[in-house]
Image (cartoon, rainbow, N blue to C red; front, side, top):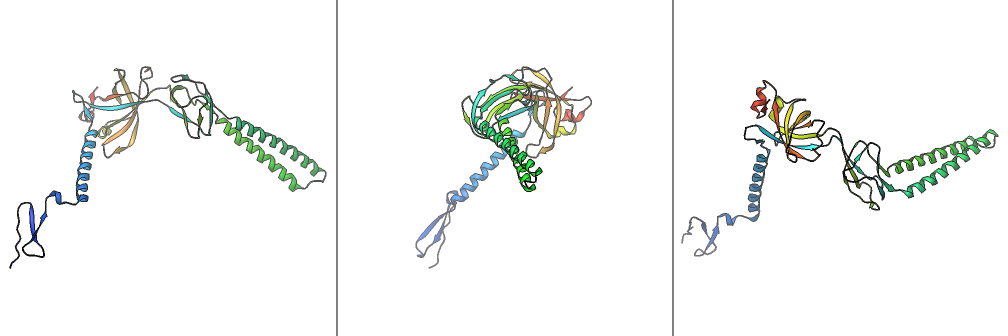
Length: 298
């Protein structure tokens, strides 16, 4: 008796050991292994993610056709002050938003243990000096060897170096403003214990503000230091001229953009670091490459 195989659209019928019994084999998607299903789902997710990122990388266009670029306002200088040694906060001399001058003491830590250790080191230093002076006099009387005098001198240098270490550690107990600016954030309170490396105070400089942008890479053909942009800050609703000060040396291969930095005019008291907005480049006269890239005409 010949073995027959029955075939339909969704199922194959294969013979088993007995010719009159058939075992169905499902060939649809439900028959795939779980690992194959996960792989297919993963590939679809990655393809969707790449598509979404590609959409985000496309610059926005205003109704007039000009390319609008998002920017972030930055302070001219920033300094996150942190603790170098562990201890307890003894005094905080500033409040949030205060204007500070360079070399102002912003906060101090309770370093009484370091003071005590420094005092002990000073006592050892003075004692070492006395021993050295005595050995030197004895050497003049032929009562002390040169080796003893040399050892006494090295002890003086050792204790003096120990004092320098404590002086350096005590200097870290004071948080001093490195420039003129404003207090952006205070992380600690008086009496709070902090560890080494813990943030204490964030400072922002009071100089001319900056703006950082990622502009389309085709702007490189005409963009240069000194180029002008027209910026609109969302928080204030006002427009400000921006001047290009720095251009990155590398184009981002994924988004096809290049990072630049610009500066605001000097008198922009209503703009604060952290604000954001949109900017449009202003084309120089007779610069066709700029107009083709979607920038505004001057």
